[in-house]
Length: 217
Image (tube, rainbow, N blue to C red; front, side):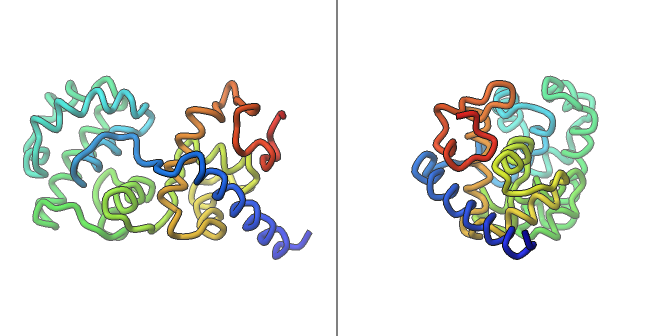
C-alpha cells in the first residue's frame, strides 16, 4: 500500500471515529479542576506521572493559598514540596512551578502567555502542557495533547504506527480536523479511563468496536 493510500485510509477512519465519539462524548473537557489559566498550568505540571483525581485532591489548598504567579514565585520550596508531595516527583515539580511562576512575573507581568513559543519557554512546560493550556483555557487548537491514553488508543485504533509522542501528535493533526484537536484529546483520555482500559478493555461496550482493528468483539 502506498503512503498516500495509507494516509487517506487513516483520514477516513479518523472521520468515522470522530463522528461516533462526538455522539458519546459531546462535551468532553479537561478533568483537572481550575478557574484560571494559572491554576490549569499548575495543575497540569502536577499531573505528570500522577492521576487527575489525586491532583484535584491537592489543588484546592494550593489555589486558596497561592493566588497569583508572584505567590508561587515567592513560595518556600520546602513548604511547597510538602504540599504537593502526594503527587509524586515533588522536588522536580516544585522546581518547575516556582521557576515557571518566576518567569511569568519577570517576562509576562504575572500573566500566562497565549502562544506555544512563550509557553514552552517557561521552566517545566513542554509542548504537551502548552497544548492543554492553549486548547482548554484559551480555546486555541495548536496541537493534540498526547498523554498515555491518547498514545495507547491512537495506536490501538491504528491512527498511527509511531511510538514517539511528537510523531503521534503530527499524525493525529494530519487526520483529525483542527477544530476538534482539543476535544479529541480530552475524549480519548476519557474513553481510555472509562471503556478502553489498558488491563481490561471493555470492547463489548465500546462505541468504536466495529471500527477498531484491536477490538476483541
